[in-house]
Structures are given as C-alpha cells and as structure tokens.
Image 1: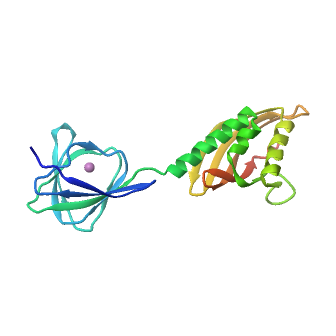
Image 2: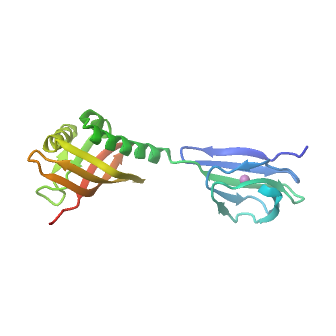
Length: 221
Ligand code: NI
C-alpha cells in the first residue's frame, strides 16, 4: 500500500484553512477535489507527480518559497516523485462567513420591505442605526438617526405608498459596505404611480445594518 502524505492543520478560522502537507518519498495525498481556491507555498524543493482525471499523469517542480495558486475544482492525486522528503503549505480561502451573513441580511431586508413588515425591517438594523432617504433638505437627503426615528420613517414610507414593490433586486457586500440594487414600483396616496430604479448603499455593524443610504433615479418626462 502506498504511504499517505501527512496533513497538519496550522490554522482554520472563518476565512482560511492552512494545512502543511508532509510527504516521505513516494507518499501520496490520495484522490481529492479542491472545494476552494488555494495557494501552495513549497517549504522544500521537490518534484510532484500528479495523477489527473482520465488517467493522465504530469509532473511539477516545487521550488522552496515560490508559491502558486489554483482555482476550486482541481481534481488529482499528488505524489512525492523525488527521493527526499517534501512539504508545502496549502492555504485555502474557505469562506467569508461574515460577508455571507451580511448578504443574507440584505435578502431578509428586501423581503421585509415587500412584506411591509416594520418589525422585520428593524430586526435587520443595528442598535445604533440611521436612514438617509433619497431626497430631503440636505446633501445627504432626509436623515433619520436612531432606532425610533428609523422605525418611524420606514412606517411613514408604507403610509405614503399604500402599494409598493421592490423587484429585480441584487445584493452585494464588500467589506463593511453593502449595495442593494432594485426597481421600485408603487402608487402613493394621491394615486400617483412611481416606477424607478434605485439602490441602497449600506454600512454594517457586525451582521446588522448601521446605515441605509438610499438613491433613486429622478424621472423627467
Ligand atoms: Ni490537491
């Protein structure tokens, strides 16, 4: 039986897994599929033998300290094809759990708007929160600061628009900033119909929304 390479996990947090793989001469990892993008940092010089799907074989030269990256989906069995022990660090970008949680909050937030559910909207907001509306007296639009003011402004928006729907929504998170794109169609209390594209720029505090900063197209006919 072929000797197996030894994996040693040095770090596993909410974004990365770092594994040192140690190979005696002839040792192999066994077949595996990489589920994540990864970087290999050779800790020794060496020669890898690669078994690839379809029975193909390849060789790769490792140079101590010279890294390379691969995308998720690589499938292979890796063997130490040299005569000396060989090792490398495998750094996998496993996930960004905070970013995923924030995107989920943006989806919940949009669903709450369409459900006209102020409690559900406020569940998405941080303890210290604010809403800067798309229009108002200053360059930031109308500013509503604090949970009570934010709640009141959301409730007022539902009163202003007895019919309101947000659709064609797309949500993105980059660091502490979120972006939701949407189309708003509604009818206000006077019967006036609105159909515009817009977006919200968000600032997050943890997983919750600390600031909703709204922008809408101005329709000129
Ligand atoms: Ni691999």
